[in-house]
Length: 108
Image (cartoon, rainbow, N blue to C red; front, side, top):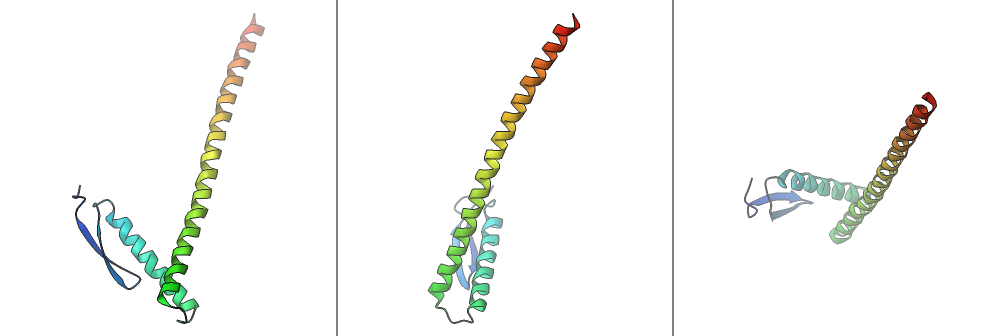
């Protein structure tokens, strides 16, 4: 495991950034930097270079925040469905147990 004080240097959106990171974080940091750069380039192309760097960065940040909000909502839905399935499995197990008891009672 890397020392948490190790520094990783990346390029994101045309800027050089140095961050303290663990070895486990480095691949995520590099992916995030590539995604930021890609997003900024797409926004710049879509606007024909007519927007200020601050506006492009704000638009990219908004896009990421929106995607995060959507992912959070999907995760909440998945967790709710997981809980519902667990409850249904419990109900099925109780029904199977009751049916087995009824079958046993009818066998006599």
